[in-house]
Amino acid sequence: MTTPDAPATDPDAATATPPHVRRMIVLMLANLALSALLAGLMLAFQEQLLDYQLAHLDLPAGTDLAAARETLRSSAWSRVLPVALVALAYLWVIHGLREGQRKAYRQVVYVSVVVLLVSGLTLLQPFPWWIRAVNVAKALVVVALLFLTSRPQVRSWFAATSRRAVVDGFSS
Image (cartoon, rainbow, N blue to C red; front, side):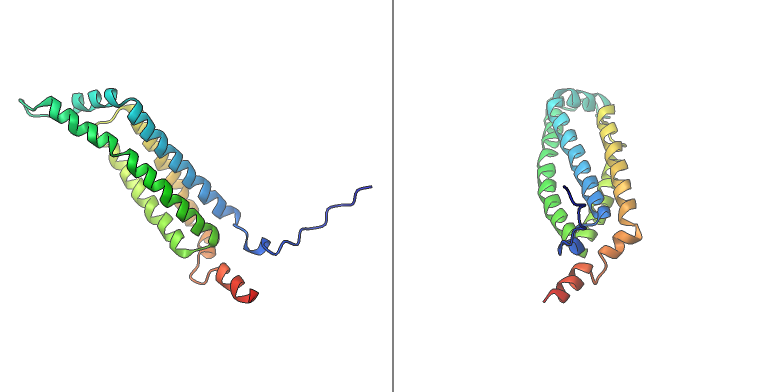
């Protein structure tokens, strides 16, 4: 005979990561995945991207196309390293979010605003449609993340006197 499950009395339940913070983390990881996708596509289709950019640049007559192509090539490679660095930074910020650190919350807001601005600026650059599509998707994810961070329950979780600090203070 089975007995009904008793409600869990987990002492860590009071300090568990709330659902809205988990949603923030999912959106951050979605943004990171889109960034990695974009970097991978730019490397995989690097020659086509360079051809497109050269065809759409306003270059003065007599410009050395080989030099211009190499300059564009180096900028394409420079997009991979930031994605790797952002991945490491995101892991650190995600840890802080789970801990209820206000600093991590502020970092999410700042990084989201920067990503939104950069994604918007890339729409003004000579890039093919697929780069623009990924940047629009990134912008939509970041807008959702900024909307979520503005919710009262999220702001209260990361208030200056965080629940974490209060709970830790009572446990001693």
